[in-house]
Image (cartoon, rainbow over all chains, first blue to last red; front, top):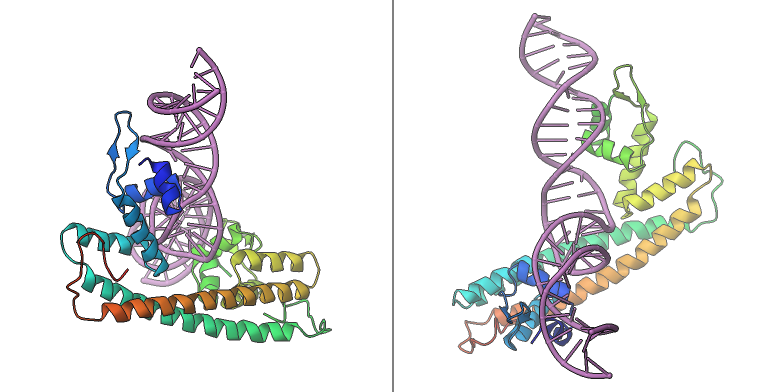
Length: 129
Length: 129
DNA sequence: TTTGACCTTCCACTGTACTGGAAGGTTCAT
DNA sequence: ATGAACCTTCCAGTACAGTGGAAGGTCAAA
């Protein structure tokens, strides 16, 4: 299977697949006599895993860690568990932060929704902020 | 006021202030005979505005827009209103996305919290993902 | 044989908001 | 006069996940 076909099969681009190889997320593919990358069907599953990892909010670096543990013949289960737990905590923090920001902006916006102020003084940039 | 003092007064660094100048967020400061930047007190307010804008979730680019409108002698109120509204919508979308992701990861994590599976087959990277 | 679609490598760039460091000039107190 | 603490410019790099494009090689069909 050539790179274009793998890209099509996995819903990504050839550029991205080469980038994954370069980043160590995909093992270097076999090459045809003319130098074209020649993938096995296994690669489809591998790319699928990368995409599911991304959908789970993991970074490519973290996905690479899991993949490397797997390649060393170990089950990455407990590492995955840790990563997911960590991600969960980060996510909670991030959500809390965004909710607080939303509150701030919401108030600012409500103030700014009033009719044009006549107290828009020249010595400040904007009374709303 | 020299750049180090302005940095101290506004709780930032000289690097950042020069970067703001370069990015058009701060007007080029007057220079002393020896070439040092020489700020007026006004600059403190300006940097404060930038920080408040950031706290409101605006990008430096957006803050720059507001500042430029102000410099053209217009009141940026309605533009600020629009920016805040836009930011609010983005934020809502972002929060919704993160909550959905949190849900996904939470389920994955709960599954991964079970004791080591004996069905950890070699043809997939990790059954949890 | 030629055309077009595909493939290769390599280098540089995207956006965001800075940060680090080198090499050199200035100011002020001792 | 000397040392510390400040200032200047310029270049390059950070994280993240790719993307764009140039220059050239390959393959299959018409």
